[in-house]
Amino acid sequence: MAQPVSYIARKFIEENIDFAIAKVIETKGSAPRKRGAAMIMTPEGNFYGTVGGGLLEARTQELCKKVMETKEGLTYEFILDEQQQGENALAMGCGGDATIQVDYIEAANPGNFVEEFRLKSDAYIFGGGHVAYALEPLLRHVDFTTTVIDDREDYANAQRYPKAERAIVCSDFDHCFDEIETDEDSYIVIVTRGHRGDLQVLRQALRRPNAYIGMIGSKRKNKLLFDELLQEGVTQEELDRVHAPIGLEIKSETPEEIGISITAEMIQIRAEKAEREMRFREVADIHAD
Image 1 (cartoon, helix red, strand yellow):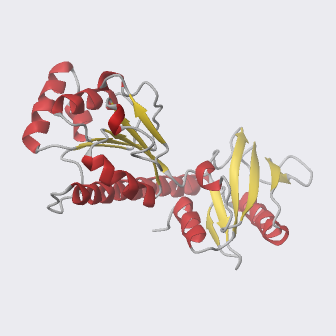
Image 2: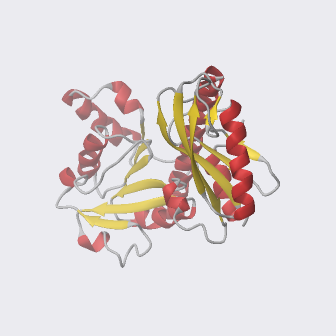
Image 3: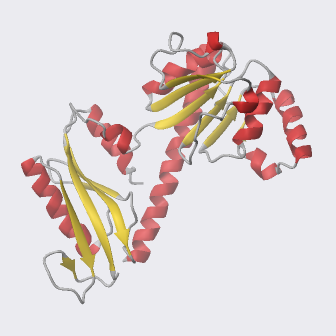
């Protein structure tokens, strides 16, 4: 299966390979791909991803070649209407418009590209104890942006987590999401110091968008928490999305081993999510053609 453009871009940056990337930044009407669709061109002229197929794809590839030569980005608005005339009009039956932005990415100096293109996913670690301390640097090394939240200042501070994106002290875990805005690319890790804190975080996490929720604890302890949430009106389907006990089963015992098992599970979930999104795009491309 073809790899997502984000993974290819990350690989090129790690291998110090410059490239051009074309992104759909705006659409009007019936465009074949929506905002966020992207395509990468290598120095050898190979392309990965798609911005819509057909004439739009061909013209965008020409723009990518130009940007690779000049190393200067550009933005171009295409009119996707076979009834229109002009240089930027394409004889396509979509009847909409698509604005394409093409950037030259220098691998040695990618600037804000990593953040803008979401090559890093957001990981929110609730609880700043031993497991979190082992886990946080592991997640950063595999391209997660980390935020640590605890109700104890001694466990959530810049000295303890100097390279985390943020360390947040909440008044209590009932208010642990007050300074956080999650989305469909957010990964929630629940490793507080006790089952009551875990329950407080999980209760709120289930009501917020996310890509992953994982909670530490034994099967017996987690069942007690799940039973309590079921009585509160949470559905079994919602609870089935929670990875509990958290992490892949590797017989981990120490905080460091547990951190590795959690990281491995999050990598797996992220990769599966990317594959689903790629399949969805491929199906959308087929229907668009």
